Image 1 (cartoon, each protein chain N blue to C red):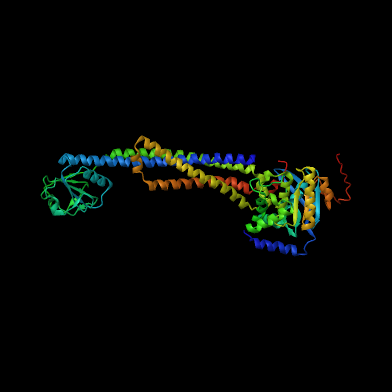
Image 2 (image 1 turned 180 degrees about the vertical axis):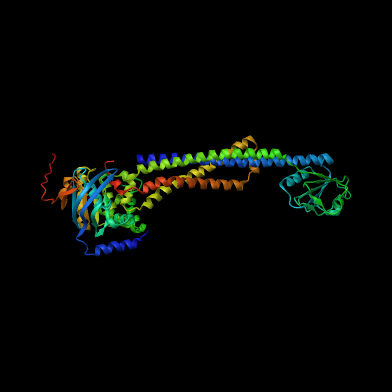
Length: 319
Length: 259
C-alpha cells in the first residue's frame, strides 16, 4: 500500500513536470499569436484613421455628404474597415459600383458623379474599368481618392484630382522590426528547447526509479510468461498516459494565462476579437502532440531496461 | 522471428508424446560458469538428476552451493553453460527467448518465498494474469481461475487485494496462480519460509493434495524439515555438485517439539 502511494505521488510530480514544460511552450506560442493579432489590429486602425483624415481634409465632414464608391477587385481588410467608418459617419447617400452593402445605393458609371462630393476607388485590381472623366462627371468637387498605388483608369485622363489614399510604413522601420523579431525568436526557441529537455529528463528519471523499484514485479511477470515486448509496452503506455494528461493541462494553462495577462493590459475586445482561433487551435493540438511524443520518447530507455531484465531476479528473496 | 501459439503447442505436444516421458526433468552433467570481468565462478560443476512425473523433490544445500542456480536451470529460468537440461523432453538450450517465455508460461508454475503477488490487482486478476499471457479468453480464464481458487479454498476471497489477506492466504493465491495454465511442474522457492508453523503445514498439505489430484511434479528448494518429510526424494547440493539423493525415509529426521 505504501509502495502504491509513493508511486502515485511520483506520478503526480512527473505530470507536473510535463505540465510546466508544455505550459511554457504554449505560453510563448499564445503570446506571440496575441501580440501579432494586436499589432495587426493597431495597424488596421492606424490605416483607417489616416484615410479618414485625408477624406476630412478634402471634403470636410462626411456627415450629410454624398459619396461615390467604385470597387475594382476584392476589398482588403483595411478598405472594409474604412467603408464601415465612412458609413458610420452618416453621409447623406453612398452610391456604389460593384458594391453591395446595406446603406449603399447601387449605381452605375454615368449616374455616379451627379452632385457627388467625393469619389472613392477601392479594391486590389490594378486597373479600373471606368474612366475618371466618366466617373467624375457632375461632381461638386472633382476629387477622387484611390487606395491603390499605380492604378490605371480606362479611357481619357481626367481633369479630376486623383489623390493617393494608401499607407506605406517606412521601409527601414519595417526591416528593423523584422530583424528584431528574428533574434527574439531565436532566443525563445532556445529557451523552449531547454525547458522541454528538462521535462524529458525528468520523465526518464522518474520512470527509471519506477523500473528499479518494480524489479520483483517485472521478474514475476516474466516468470509467468510475459514477453519482453509486453513489459516494454507496459512502461511506454504508463508514460503516454502521463504525457497526455500533462499535455492537456499544460496547454490549457498555457492558453489561459497569456489571454488573461493581455486582456488586463489591453482590452478584452481587442484581444479576443482579433485573435485567430483557428491558428490557436492548431498550435494547441501540435503542443499536445509534442508533449505526448516527448513522453513516449523519454520512456524508451527505461522501458528497454525493464524489458531486458532476467526473470531470475524475481527469485532473489534476499534483496 | 514470431512463432504462433498453436505452432508452439504442437512443438511441445510432439515432444512429450515421445513416450509420455517417465522423466519430466532431466539434467545431464550440467555446468554453469559466471564470468564477471576476469573472475570466473563455477556455480555448477556437473550436476545430473532425473525427476519423474508426479514426484515431489526437495533440494537442499548451503548458500553458495549452487542450489539456486540448479533450481533456476530446472525451471527454465537460465540456460546451462555446458551439459543439457531437458524439460518434458525439450532441450532448453535450443530455445530462443520467445520459446523460453512460452515454456515458463505453460509448463512451469512458480511459487516464491515472498509470494510476489501484484498488489494493485485482486486475487482473481492475479490468477488470470498468466492465462492472459497464454492467450486464453477472459471468460474462460475467469471460470478456470474460480475453479482453481476453489481448489485451494479461497473462492470467497477472489475479489480481495493481496494486502487484505494473511500470509498463508497470499501463498495459497500464489499457488493458484502457479496452477493457472495447468503446468506439468511446480517450482517452489522456500514457500514456507515466510509463514508460521501452522500455515506452513497447510501449504505442505496443499502440495500433497495437488500431487495426488493433479499429478503435478513438485520441486522445492527448502530448509523446512516438515517439507522434507513429505517429499519423495531429497537432493543435497554442495559445492556445485549433487552430493546425495535420498528418500525421505532414509533421512533420519527428528522434529523437536516445543511444549
